[in-house]
Length: 77
Image (cartoon, rainbow, N blue to C red):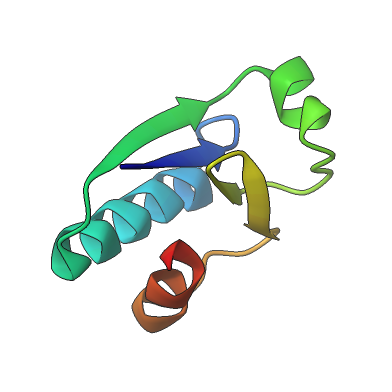
């Protein structure tokens, strides 16, 4: 099982990131846990300066933009 973390304060782009991540994980048939990290101190502990950001198993994969569905699938592998 992989841990998907969406880092952001809950803005529309952050919500879209969560939707794209969940959709991609479901399409790929992988087991996952989705966590939305909204605490600014916790977000900063990842070294992220721009949201939304995506971390997979604790490693930041992308920040500052919402990837396409195909890009998201590549990030989750």
